[in-house]
Image 1 (cartoon, rainbow, N blue to C red):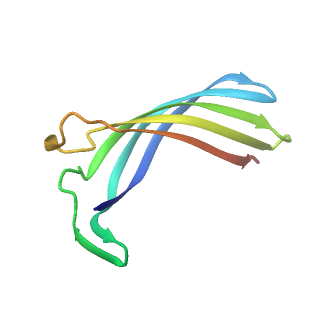
Image 2 (image 1 turned 180 degrees about the horizontal axis):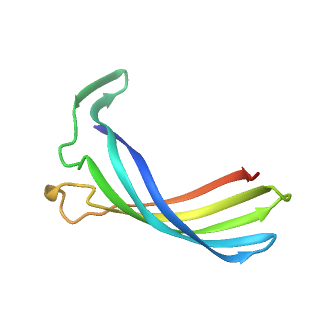
Image 3 (image 1 turned 60 degrees about the vertical axis):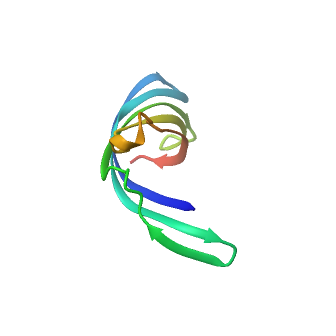
Length: 116
């Protein structure tokens, strides 16, 4: 049995600059609203794949708390590379029949930004 689920996340975060030089360090915190986008359960074997329904213990909307660090490096005056390790603790993901389980997500987000 395989379960597939996906969410659309709407984050609201605040970033506080601790170090603002060529190397930068930010403290990031906030919350996110997550909206259930996909919820399917499949029976899969070699050569066989059948949808058997949906999980009934997922809430359509839930909240996560977010905290992380922003590590930034100013490549040039207007280009910045960043790496942001973040932990997101999920609240109210499941209905009451799932026990007292609250999952968490650890992610490392990275990118290059251009400011003008």
